[in-house]
Length: 388
Image 1 (cartoon, rainbow, N blue to C red):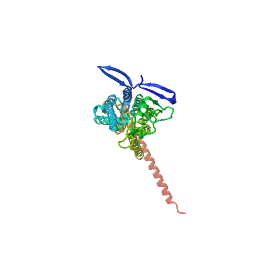
Image 2 (cartoon, helix red, strand yellow):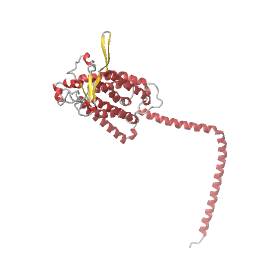
Image 3 (cartoon, rainbow, N blue to C red):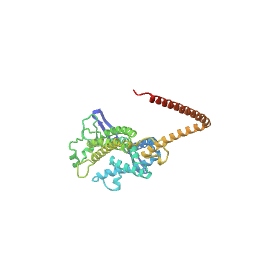
Image 4 (cartoon, rainbow, N blue to C red):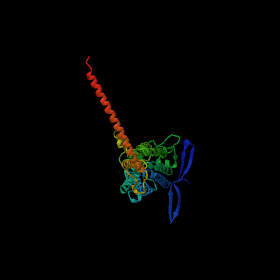
């Protein structure tokens, strides 16, 4: 029997069976269930790893380096997502280790995962002495893609939905109704108009579509960006804007203790403001000091397979200048070789040329002397003439 029967009344879809589990079985006397939520998150990570490894070489990185980053991003990201949720739900979630790591009933916050992933990148970049701006700009592209896929886990759990709506794609299920009816007095006061029997906003779908668009945009930004951290700042701006709007619709937000401020909306507003300031200042510096413009995300020709493959943008400029100087030196060497090959003939020709030049010079000198003598005679003749 299905866990949920999902309806999209405006689209003519009714009683769509949805199960939370992929498969359940007994192993050594214990019942084990594999949930769609976990499978989808794993698929999201695998796709991001696959794409980043394929594109690593053109950005001066290797597959091994990508693997090293993900080995820490995955555990710290998951830990950060859970701790973030526990901190802001400490009234309903126990603080024992068992409760903290029990995610079977939900409780992963995306922003916590981002914070954990950022920490992981900083640690690995420091160990490998990689330039943070290049690493952040590289990985920022895959963040919305992974999140877009992961949001379908919310659908299978029938969670992270919004308030009531009359739009054609409004969603209803026994899961949405049960959750709304379970809201406590405080939560109900914050959302007084909720009707458990009416369709709600499928906010997971909104974020899925928006994050796919952000992914496509960031691919172009990373390809053309010429200032450090531009790709990452663009992600913060775009996703912060999307999340600020979507969070305002959701029925399960995390609140700042003692207030009715939604944590994710506050954080999204900070992301929007910070990224706008950064992009504006970066643009101003670019206009005022165009000579400072450097390419951040550009393929490094001949990148080797060591950790030194990731180089700073300043080093890339130096490499380009060195390549130009090398080409000029090669041209000079080729000209020198040609000169050496015809050296003997050149010496003979130079002697005859010197004689010819000397003769021409003597002739010219003689002609000049004759002209001077003639000019003197004319001047003397003029002097002998009487004045009028």
